[in-house]
Length: 142
Image 1 (tube, rainbow, N blue to C red):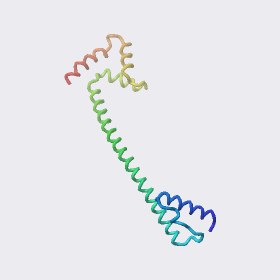
Image 2 (cartoon, rainbow, N blue to C red):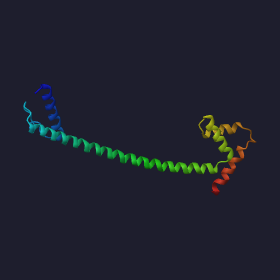
Image 3 (spheres, helix red, strand yellow):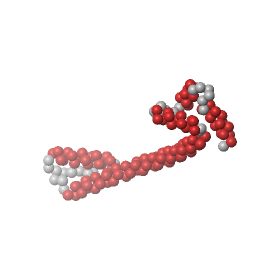
Image 4 (tube, rainbow, N blue to C red):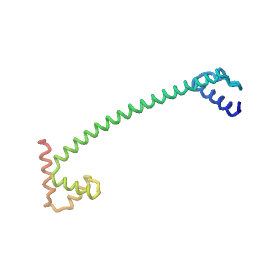
């Protein structure tokens, strides 16, 4: 038998024996490599593959459970944000909605500081000034 093949088989036996927790001296190969030892090696390889498969399946199942929980939490958060968005849309004045749409079209992120700075730069007779008391008065009655 070729020396490289023999060394590879010896390494495989040692590796599989360490995986399976058996003594590598119990599984030996002679240079003739009889049919019984080849069957024994095949059985050990199959056992090792089954062991690896079961560990991988266990790890995948754990990861799937974690991901399912994250999906559930994200769906709940999404639902909550959609309800909040709907409420804010109903409470906002048409002027505020128009200003928000304009900010989105300009590419500037909507924020409380940009809306307050834009409303403060407008004259006091602006239509956005009366909208705030309307929101405040409609808030407690809702």
